[in-house]
Image 1 (cartoon, one colour):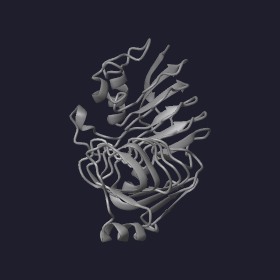
Image 2: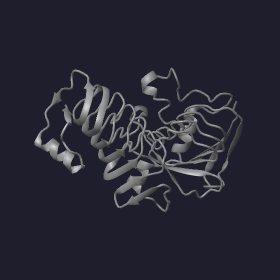
Image 3: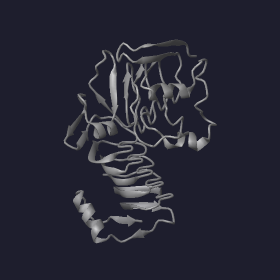
Length: 310
């Protein structure tokens, strides 16, 4: 049940604040995709739906953020908070680019997959954030009692802007992540010739919708690695789970291990280099070319035992 306290000026940011009470967690609050609306056509969630026992709709929270306002949630939050926050999604009539947005404050705990594919804005959390988290790293908070999270892609595209990283280093065009957390969608929508290196295992959709740059995971990865990849390079120094390179449009995926089942489902073009994998029939295993070998060597791999799936 939600009780609206209404709108006021945020003490933290001095921007228009939409504040709600959340005595029980609700999924997909401030989710710019509305739980991937294009997959279920509004059956699971629609922007017009009202948040339970509340006069505001899910869409109004998103529009408030798009208009530069902040959202505060007093209580615990469910899964997929702020999914794709900061993206002007083409599905909803946007141009697909990043947009400036407000911030989200949570005076409670947050369940898994917070900030998947998020590109702009901040999330402040007073309680515990359950892993995996999304395309986020922690920065030093300017609000007492809150953890502060920022999009990995945002840092690469727009710089630190005075933020101080925790568990990470930005050295030129290289972001080194060693914060010990499990993440989803690392490097989502990256479109800059930079390098993201993460030490540790990751979960879903590493490098989703990338167009430029390199994401390297020194560990294993979950399902949908390189999903909708449209340029750049995704490197997994270990195994991946199923559906690697699903809907891949372009670019390179390197898996120093097993790339899983249903490899390259609905793949258009691009190159997959892996030691093993079970591709769908449209994708064929081919011998490595000289170019392929040089790519592997450039990234520090011995080409022996690698296979090409194209």
